[in-house]
Amino acid sequence: QTGQHLLKELLNSPNYSQVHEYGRRVTDTELLSNGKDKLQQKVIDFEKLNELGLKDGNWDVVFIT
View 1 (tube, one colour):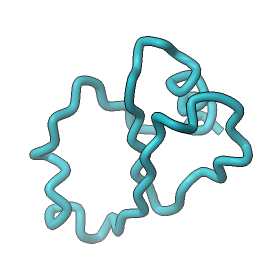
View 2: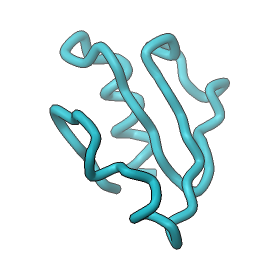
View 3: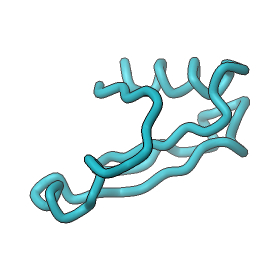
């Protein structure tokens, strides 16, 4: 619940031009009303986090829920 609420807030905010969602599954975009065009989703294997190169990303803000 917390993650979906945060995702909706970020997508509705004019302060964020891109929102990337990484998780075991992606959020159904039918549940989202605004900002779908700035959402990028990716399913990841949490057993292989070191192989994904996420720590090398160019992030301004990171939220973990």
